[in-house]
Image (tube, rainbow, N blue to C red; front, side, top):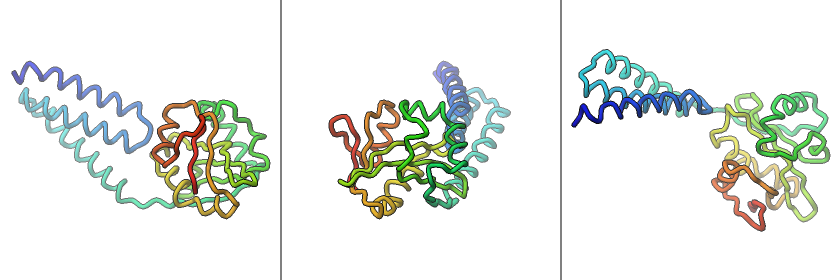
Length: 206
C-alpha cells in the first residue's frame, strides 16, 4: 500500500516546490518549500532513500530557521505625506504603471493632483502609495492604493487601515470608499480589512 501511494507523495512534493518558485514573497516561498521538503521526507521514508531524507531534513530546518527569524523580526513602518509633483513618486508610478493597471485600470498620474497622497515606508523602503480625495462630507475616495509585489503580505494594508487611519481622520475623513473594484483578490483584501460592499462600492467607516 505504501509503495502504491509513494509516487503520488512525490508528485505532491514536486508541486509544492514548483509553487514555491512562483509565489510572491520570501515567506510564502519558505512555507511552500518547507511543505515540499516534508513531502519528500515522507517519500524518502517509504522508499528507505536516506539521501533524499537527509537532504530534505536539512532544507526543512533551514526554512524553519528562516521563518522563525522573519516572524520574530519587527519591521519599521512609517507614513510620509508627499506632494503630487514629487519626482520620486512620478518615477515610482511610471516604473509600476503596468502592474498598477491590474488593480486600478483607469488610473492616470494626474488623478493624484489635489489628493491626500502618502507613501508607506517599510524599513525606509517605499512599499505602498496611497492617494485619496476627501470631500466635504468626509468620504475619502481612494484614487490609488498600490503595494509592490514584494510587500503584499497584508501588513501594509493593516497599517494603513488601522494604525494609519488617524492621519485620514485628521484630514477630515470619516470613511474610506473604493469605487468599481473589479480585481477579485483586491476585493478579498478589502473584506479582510473590514470593508463592506454598498451599491458596488467598498466602504469602511473610520
